[in-house]
Length: 453
Ligand code: FAD
Image (cartoon, rainbow, N blue to C red; front, side):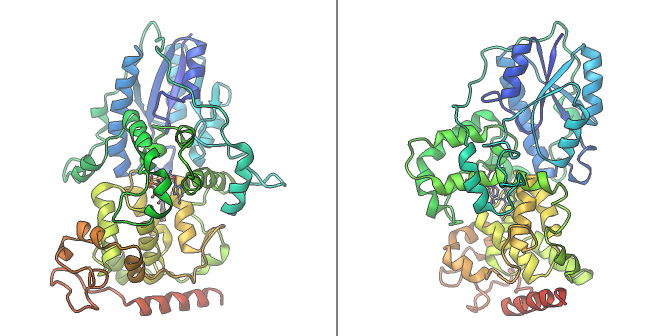
C-alpha cells in the first residue's frame, strides 16, 4: 500500500528525512493540506498565503522531476489525512515534526499512523534542556547547551525518483485556493524582492556563504543587505537549517550568524514549554499593565501600521514591511519598541500585524521576539530599556534606507534625515511626530510604575 508524505513547513526535497523514509517504504503520495481551521486564530496571514502559492507551485514542479505529484487538499488536517488514507489504502503517514501547538495536537491525534521525523531544527528542542530536563529560558544558556547536540552528519541529497501509487487521488488546484491577493493587489513589491521555492532558497544560502564573515557588523545596517534574508525560506522549510549550518563550514568566523540561526531552535523550545506564549505575557506582572486603548490609541496604531508616525526610521520600516513582506531585524526592534513603549500599545497588537504582513511570520520567532522587546517575556530586555528611535537611526546610518521607503523625505539631507522636524525641514506631506520622544518615554515609565503598584 502507498505511504502518505505530509508536507507542512518543510517544502523541500533535499535533506527531507520524511521523504526519504516514505520512499523506502514504497509508493509515495505527497500531500499538502491548506488547513485554516486547526490553527484557530493563528491561521496563515495574507503575506504568507502569497508565499505559499509560489512555494507550492515550485514544489509541485520539483516533484514532477522525480516522476511524482503534489496532491492538494483543503480542510482540517487530521480528518483530511484520515479520509485520504481511507481513499488510497495508505496505512502510514510520514512527516517532519513541528512545534506550533496546533501541529503538536494534530501529531498526537495521528499517533497510531504517523511516523514523525526531525528535520526542522539544529537539534530537537526536547534534547537541549537544563540539568533538570526543562527547556532553557535564557538564550545564552541555551546556546551553551546546544553545543553538545549540533547536527553531525552532512544533510542528505534528494532522491533521483519517487515511486507513485498505481492510482493517484484527486487534487485541488492552487487556483481553487485563491491564495494571491486580487483587489487591491498589494503584492507587486513582493514579486520584485522574492522568488519562493527550494531552488532560490539554496541559491540564497550559497550566495550568503561569501558574506557570512562580514555579517557581524553589516547585519545591523538597514541601508545594507548584510543579513541572509533566508527567513521566509527557513520558515517554509525550503532549505533545512542543518544545510545552512553546514554551508558555513570553512567560511571563517561565522559564530555571530550561527548564534542567530540557533534562535529559531530556542524559540521552539519556548513554545514547546509554553504553548500559548503568543497570547500571554511570559511574566504575569504585565497582566495589569495599563496599555492604552480606545479611539486615540486606535488612531496611533493605524499611524504605526501605515508608516505615518513622524519618526522616519519607524515609518521606513513599516512601509518596507507592507511593500515587501519583510523588515530589517534592527528596524523590527525599533518599530516594535516604538509601538509598545512610545505608544504604550499592547505588544500583541503589533505581533498580530506582523503575523499578517511578514512572509517569514513564525509562531515561535514572532512571539518570542515581541515579548523580548516588550520586556514581558521569560528571556527579555527590561521594560524600562526604551530604544531611542532617532539616535538608533543615526547610529546605524539609516539615511539611504529612509530615503528608499519614505519618498516624502527623498530630498532631505543626511544631517536632517533622522529627525527632519527638529532640523526645521519637515516636508508638508510628511506627518509631524505623533508623540515626542521624552513624552513617550515618561508615559511608558509611569505606566510601568503603576503596574508594579
Ligand atoms: P539573518 O540575520 O540572516 O539570520 C538568519 C536566520 O536566523 C533567520 O532567517 C532566522 O531564521 C534566524 N533568526 C535570526 N534572528 C532571529 C531572531 N531574533 N529570532 C529568531 N530567529 C532568528 N523572525 C522570523 O523568522 N519570523 C518572525 O515572525 C519574526 N518576527 C520578529 C518580530 C520582532 C519584533 C523582531 C524584533 C524580530 C522578529 N524576527 C522574526 C527575527 C528576525 O528579525 C528575523 O528572523 C530576521 O530579520 C530575518 O532576516 P534574515 O533571514 O536576513 O536574518
